[in-house]
Length: 264
Image (cartoon, rainbow, N blue to C red):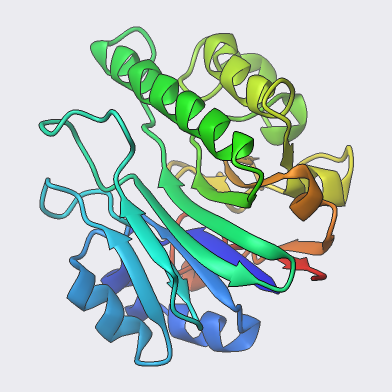
């Protein structure tokens, strides 16, 4: 089972820039998308008839948007994060249930808030993380296989960002209070950071690079895109790859896709 996840930074623009060629080449069974910035019909039309698309579209036009796309139809779909208020920025959480060879499987595509340090937006991010924390604990307790993938907008430590020292506890995404949520998920909740488990304790591989300066050319990146799985499902992972573009002007997004193969 091949699962790819990517923040496309606008699916219409990504398709114009070559996303379809990457999709044909990588050929995933499941595709978890973030920041689609499009309604459900557009996402379905762009991916084509061979995909079943379970989306959550943002209430704010042209913002956010997530989807789980699959070659087989899901047995159930739940759009939106439980407990989220109706008037907040949405399009950041969708769950889809499937029957798999290993048993019932829930896939979650998520796009967490980025926030800006020392501004009110961080309180919005922490409130969102509290809801994610509660939901992941609920999902982990079901006994189902669970895999969450997406742009979490948080690094775990120095291996996940080129310039740790200059960003740590200064910049959103690198604050200890944020990182504590991830470590709870990978500790007390019992989930696994699949990408890190597969590649080991090495620098990166990064999945996002700032548009400023020559961050991409210098590989001054961040690892903020994850696949997070329940332990039995994570144990079946047999390989992970980040499809970093060969050059800045050949990218279809400012994020690179993360693909993991699971041997079920």
